Length: 65
Image 1 (tube, rainbow, N blue to C red):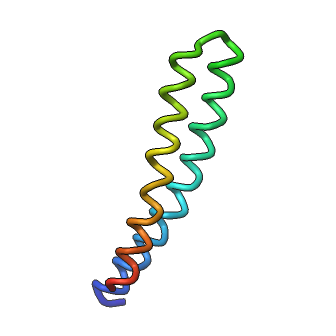
Image 2 (cartoon, rainbow, N blue to C red; image 1 turned 120 degrees about the vertical axis):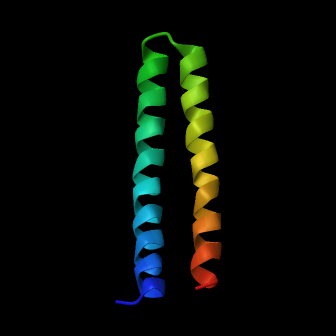
């Protein structure tokens, strides 16, 4: 596997894990809210939303390989 193929594989891997992390942040935002931690919940939701934006950048990176 050459370096470019390895990078493509890594980016695909990072994308997949990013999706998993977004789901985890959203789940914990709900848990925080149920514990009465509304501000914490809002921050976790913001983290989830910001991480969703990374998907477009990962796709852009893949197009440039």
